[in-house]
Image (cartoon, rainbow, N blue to C red; front, side, top):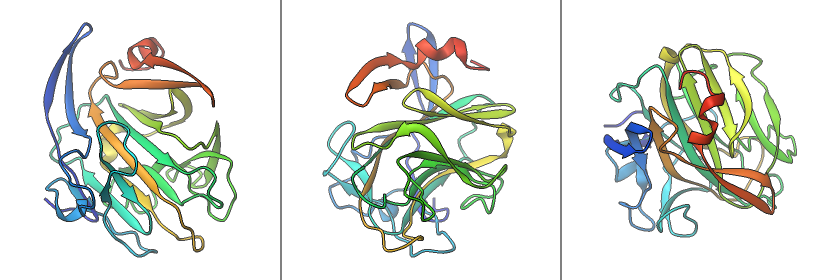
Length: 254
């Protein structure tokens, strides 16, 4: 099924753990694609989602970087892809996890953002929200987030951009969504969970002739955080392995 500029593969699985059962609605590691495959043309799930102000193209399967396995999705110039939530039957509480990689020495950084789309998928009009490296002509040292249902401007997190895999997580609750970067909460948006209609990643050279590559991998949507691996950043050179289950007591609705 096609919706905009992304295709996605939905795998509905039930996993057993010491904490009970988790419903996995999306589990995408891109391993079913061959190196160089046009994901938007070789998937029944991911779709191309066209932004209004940039050229478009699909993500490409790449062996240059991978968070797990051998393949991730590469975005290097004007790509935009995502998938709708219409057929996922998501509950009021769920979590969306994405692993994100870029070269932090790139100046300016690639203009890329992982977004949740309220109301109108694809694109979301003026209401999308997400986390990434979007610059808007600003030389950002840190990852940034944006909530277009509120101020509509990008705000810096306290987490420096770095050349390694970083985990972006959205925890959706009935009346709010929390944004996390490597296990640290960076923002809470006030929004009804029923408004979300899709997921999208955009890599657009809107603010100048930007170059550079962005990769995503291991996109997971689940109804519990316990089954999703977490790497919690302690310092740029010192990471502590952790699990989302360890943060569970601090999260509303789980």
